[in-house]
Amino acid sequence: MADKLIIFDTTLRDGEQSPGASMTKDEKLRIARQLERLRVDVIEAGFAASSNGDFEAVKAIAGHIRDSTVCSLARANDRDIGRAAEALAGAERARIHTFIATSELHMAAKLRMTREQVLEQARMAVRFARNLCPDVEFSPEDGYRSDPDFLAQVLEAVIDEGAGTINIPDTVGYAVPELFGDFIRRLRERIPNSDRAIWSVHCHNDLGMAVANSLAGVKVGGARQVECTINGLGERAGNCSLEEVVMAVRTRRDHYGLEVGIDTTQIVPASRMVSQTTGFVVQPNKAVVGANAFAHASGIHQDGVLKARDTYEIMRAEDVGWSANKIVLGKLSGRNAFRQRLHDLGIEMDSEAEVNAAFARFKDLADRKSEIFDEDIIALVGDESVTAEQEHYRLLSLAQRSETGERPHASVAFAAGEQEFHADSDGNGPVDASLKAIESKVGSGAELMLYSVNAITSGSTESQGEVTVRLQLGGRVVNGVGADPDIVVASAKAYLAALNKLHSATDRVAAQGWP
Ligand code: KIV
Ligand code: ZN
Image 1 (cartoon, helix red, strand yellow):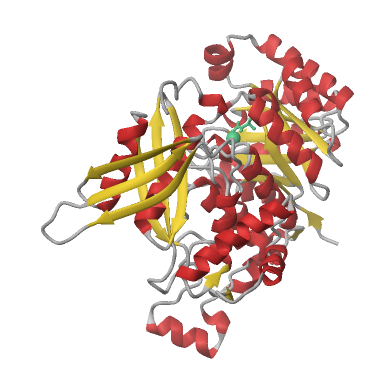
Image 2 (image 1 turned 60 degrees about the vertical axis):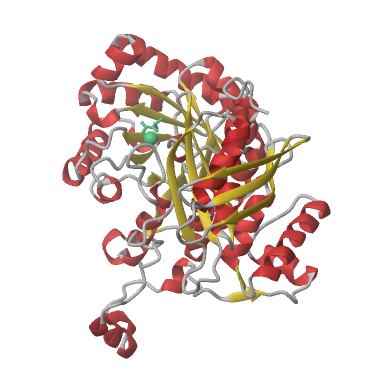
């Protein structure tokens, strides 16, 4: 029986720290359910003490997820650890993940603490956490750039206090595979009680080596847990990508000799859901989940694959959940077929009213688009999951006129809470005119940092356009996503979705004076 590699997903915590990737509680819960279907071993649901929103999200996930361990991050202090335990109280299996920086640079410049103080605080934090939860993980932040002698001292102490998982982060993505694997191996060899903990790696991708470093940590270092995110989402260049690590270990089982408990057919649905929710588009040539990952364009390759699939394919597209744009529903599909499809996609709705509202949107879409694919349903349900509280701004109607030689013009009607607004504007194009019309009434002053359009399903101009708009205001960055067969409408929806995020409860201050 091969050893098991534990997959610890931190999309909802470290992934969400990526500017603009913040998610609502309902969005996080939906992704957590998909992670459970993917059968990840541990879901890091958030950082409970960091905000009320995060606390509520961790609590909701802890209350719903049954098959994966639910984890909350906590700094190494009693308040953070207490909040994490409180948020995790309803979990079937809970983990508290506590951390403190151990590199000279972080201790001096950020924490302003001595080595002795950090050692003591780490020890006390793990002791306190163990009194609240039997499953405790400890991370020395910036561990890879820490002095190995001091690091070993801290890790031996926290294992003595009962930390069952020791996670070594390469916080700034500075490691290279040969050195990182060796670093983990040496640490394990020199710490007398190292066999009382499972060793874990947590790599950032600043030099594009997060996956390679994690795998070296496993193969050379003996780590048996990898911390990773869907699509490699994360701050700066992101985290280690779950799909790449899982498929590497599975495809090269001859080399790694490890089992992973992941249901790989759920990888692509998870990737789509995270990308559609956060607005972080997956590059077409991204391994495993990119649109071109299994596309053979060259004649020689096509010929080879037709003759014998494994001439150019080392994985099967269907094994990671690619189903080539299957038409699933159409205009004549009824409520039961729609409900069944939601069920097959693992989408659970909390009430009959939610199913009805989603079905109404589906019918509306089916009137305008003859073939409805799974991706359309996921996008449509994404729109639906926004609660009334979060959806302060709502598009009511949009008309636009553009003609060669004429300056485009848009008339937009939208609701802001109970009020209705009608706005007109010219623009360089119909999208520009529509967003300017909305802005003329809202007056947010937010800076547009990114605008992108993607076809939700490939191969047809009938596809829905999915638009991502990234806005920045007062140091806060948010993404809004909108989908519609009409990309001007999708753009207006995306802009309003981003304004909704800026307007949400935690940002009322930023939104003062807006309608
Ligand atoms: O990158 C990092 O150091 C982290 C820790 C909190 C585990 O995310
Ligand atoms: Zn990290």
